[in-house]
Amino acid sequence: MDQYIKTGLADVPDERGYFGEFGGRFVPETLVPALDELVAAYHDAISDPAFHAELAELQRTYVGRPTPVTYARRLSEQLGGAQIYLKREDLAHTGAHKINNALGQALLARRMGKKRVVAETGAGQHGVASATVSALLGLDCHVYMGSVDIARQEPNVFRMKLLGAEVIPVESGTKTLKDAINEALRDWVTNVRTTFYLLGSALGPHPYPMIVRDFQSVIGHEARTQMLEMTGRLPDVCIACVGGGSNAIGLFHAFRDDDVEFIGVEAGGYGIASGQHAARFADPAIGRPGVLQGTRSYVLQSPHGQILNTHSISAGLDYASVGPEHAYLREIERAFYTYATDEEALAALQILSRTEGIIPALESAHGLAEAIKRAPSMPRDTIMLVNLSGRGDKDLNTVMSALEID
Image 1: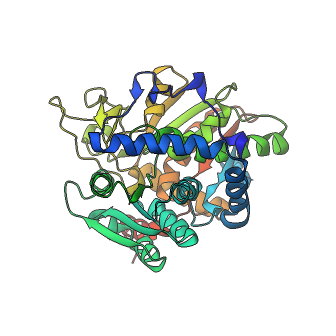
Image 2: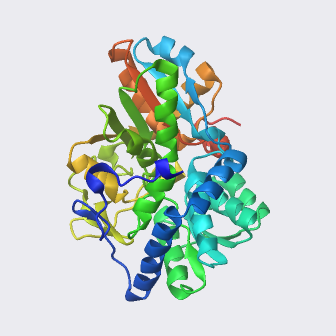
């Protein structure tokens, strides 16, 4: 696993957890010792060959890594331009990339002697992954989830309960991911001595953006090797959806020093003009640098700094901020960020299902929508690698409702 733990582009983050002007640690005093403890435990773990060996063995025998890269032949032929390849995180155990980070952090929790973990979840995939690894390692798992997300992700709620986790509904605010993170942080502050916060995306206070990126970078390192084996060269473009941004940074990280274009796709909801979206970079009037939930990044906010409500058909992208490393990559123009609307994501989901027999998660369908837009105008020898971050089983009720299918 040591090949997955890198310092990153331009050695970011620095020792204070900053990616340029983004990141850092904005937390109550009571959490500073816990974060310092986590930094020390993480650096100790990644210096220990035994930790690497156990993680690598579980990735292979439990998670099912490496996940394959699939050439989307019929989709590429139908679009008539660039050749599209899919990194199949939907085939990992639990059906999404979230297991990569959850497993790494759960091993850290056990190593630190923490027997209780708290987690947040939006689409439910991180909650399921946290419940899964907690069952595997004998940890007591509590998952905070907004009641709106509980209603639209019912199958994942049952999976978490079946795995032995307590699912705690959050009724405050918009009752979605932002509010679930708030409640998980409150729990951690209250029970900091006995509890490990298993944060699900590349955001929050330092060292979480770094830890999550490093555990998710297995995606990009595998894909880099696989593309060289399959095509004899690196892809021209890497595309991934961006909510908090863990699947995207996990893919981008391995290609950071290569001549490969990065495209992150946010949730455009009903369109930017509607104001009902979660595209932090799309409208400079409301998407501006600010601090939310322990880190400085781009945040959807009013002129007075109030956090705005968000909307996305995909629960996992329905969040008002974005991981600080993504803000940094955009600032230095290493990555380009755009958005796909609900309608475009739904269409992409159906197109992939009918051309390749793969039903993607609604989150992943946002990245796929951008590939479908771009591919026809690109030369046929262009290679696009899309991170298929999860499978669509969890979204079938949402899709049926959106398409008005009985």
